[in-house]
Length: 281
Image (cartoon, rainbow, N blue to C red; front, side, top):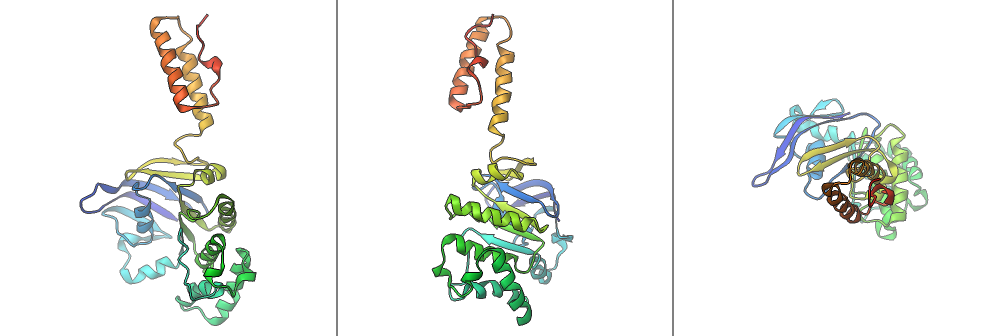
């Protein structure tokens, strides 16, 4: 569905936005794209939409080599990609129905198709009763549901979500994630850029992490940070026991003190006190 082969992208006067990225996302996957600001997430999404072109390497989306795609074919590519943004981007003078219908109208769908598909997708997102409301009459969560309906009404192969919960409270965010999960179950590939650790840690889907343009992690059932805290605690506990299992030399005494300081700094509750004994018998 999506394939990057040795892809690099640079901008004038800056370090590489992406450096030698290779990965593949299969049909029907749900993938989180994480990393700090400036890590390359936005560039990654722009390359998928052909808003930017790679300097080096190949990008394949839905069977198309984007480097060889003529500019006049780009709109047809984008019909296969729905986009959801942090700031909703709804048309303020159109109703909920009109905002969703607009996605079909701009690609030439008939009124018959519009009248059939829009109510279906509004029912999916739970907003049938708001069809005639304007955006300023909706809550933030409802506006994002409209944005998702607009992105999905044409049944795209891929749904790109750029910080879709960034402006929402935790409870509303959970509802949005349940909706995206439901859409993913229709075999729609979902790629979501996010800074929300709680969502990533709860859903445990594939995680792709970028740092300064580098791919530093590609993990199935991943968490937001580099490692599951429980696994990190177990690994550090094992290392501590290995260090303290020898004779009680001055070096080991110093080592134990150093480890205690590190454990205190990290604050890993999963490390037991017994793992750092005062003295080895």
